[in-house]
Length: 338
Ligand SMILES: Nc1ncnc2c1ncn2[C@@H]1O[C@H](COP(=O)(O)OP(=O)(O)OP(=O)(O)O)[C@@H](O)[C@H]1O
Image (tube, rainbow, N blue to C red):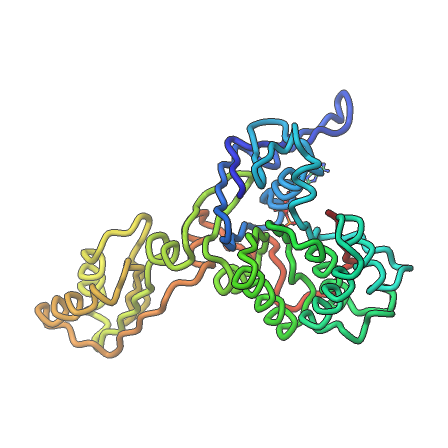
């Protein structure tokens, strides 16, 4: 459904000495199969929105190729626009029009018949829990309600591929969960393909079949959430020894466990920690080795890795330190464009 090779965009602004160039997307290879839900995950400024805008044909690539729904983004933008739904970050719903009318108009604009479009719009409003807002203008809605109206706008023409740019930004946890459910239903009932951007790790984890981690315009990892966590971050094994003098020897035991790129052993008093791939299979060997060395265990904890650990392990930085917003954020002005 989406195939890009070496996709790139270089923003140029200013003139002469003030000339500035930003290589926002720098050689991205991305493949999304029909029916997949794929998340582009990365910190602020990673190039997610720029990638989305190229895929939705609102921004021309400065390098590489992209084929979306079987059409080239540069040569056949009109064909692509008919087949996709795009819910942008900033949106574009007119604040004056009545919500229901605007969604129906959008459906008609895309060639739907009026006897089909209105019932479908009403169903979408019900599914997105905004059924009471049909006659309201977006100006009279909360940020979360407007976000769901954006989705109805992006979905009314039954697109094969939906691109969602930070779809749950500004939503409360309940609304986010509803929206995830809606996205899952789209795929289950209509085999809709979904590409979404997010910097919410829990969202990527809960919703996506596959996560493409981007940083500074590059893809730095591409796999299922579980595979990323297992192969990149490993489980955190935290061993407490009864006698702190044994800590260094316990550290040597942990150091000898399964290899993991960049994994170091930390010693903190009587506690020793290390990331280990698939710890469940390694733990019996570790405990045996500790026993063989006469080291008495006080505690042993294994923590499953999170996607935050994955990002940290890939980049040495925290996704959150890079400016990713916390779960509850102020609603921002929203809308839709296709
Ligand atoms: N119109 C523009 N002109 C110049 N630079 C831009 C423009 N739009 C984006 N950029 C820069 O390109 C880089 C990538 O931006 P982009 O919006 O694609 O990132 P993002 O991953 O979507 O970030 P966010 O999570 O904050 O939405 C950033 O350094 C940004 O400052």
